[in-house]
Length: 281
Ligand SMILES: C[S@@+](CC[C@H](N)C(=O)[O-])C[C@H]1O[C@@H](n2cnc3c(N)ncnc32)[C@H](O)[C@@H]1O
Image (cartoon, rainbow, N blue to C red; front, side):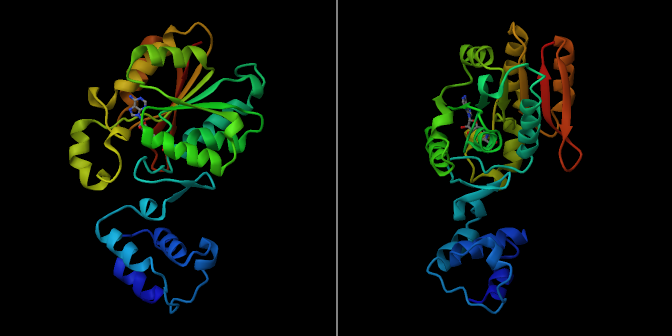
């Protein structure tokens, strides 16, 4: 099949051009940058072509076909054991880097800062911080064995074994969240935040990703209620930086206000409040 025919035959299922180019790069086993300049008459002479076409027909997301996803300029390993990292999560990472580099905030050297990435999934948040900030160490936490398997692959890929602690923990248990907050200075979190009701409506789009990575109780607010409550219980200054759902900022604003927490939101590319930063004092 020629490249031109490939584009035409999968365009309705894979609308994003860069995703289609990534699939061609995967099938031909050449860098993405080279695919862009290939003639559209070039034949995709690859044993992977039929497999790729049938997975596209099944609706399998491109990242699960190629087992890779770019995040913050680096290519991470992903598979269907983890959530596909979203571009919005880069906002959380950018803010975390800014806060950590602004050491006046916590008055600690980078090497002494205790940073944890809760609900780590593929590890993109914690590992990106290690890629970007020399001297930093992080702990990453998830309950899922599948996620921890993927994290380990990425830890090897980026050669950060000596700077990361991988922890298996159930963060629906209050004492675990309390300990995570009291043991760390900066708490990063991208928890499941989709309500059961919304998930049922969205299931066609989300059905290939692990439900445990997406859905939680209390209308999607379960983990925020717990994280914010235990933040208020900490004696030292801590900073919580968390991604939030598109319709959750009004509730979270009020919660932070009622608890007397300093807080602000960061908007995503659509102008929606997408990241909450809050601290006590
Ligand atoms: C929204 S995904 C975030 C993945 C990754 N941090 C990212 O931004 O791409 C949420 C993650 O939380 C994990 N998780 C769900 N319930 C959990 C629990 N009770 N304790 C710990 N981790 C949990 C899931 O396994 C999943 O990897």
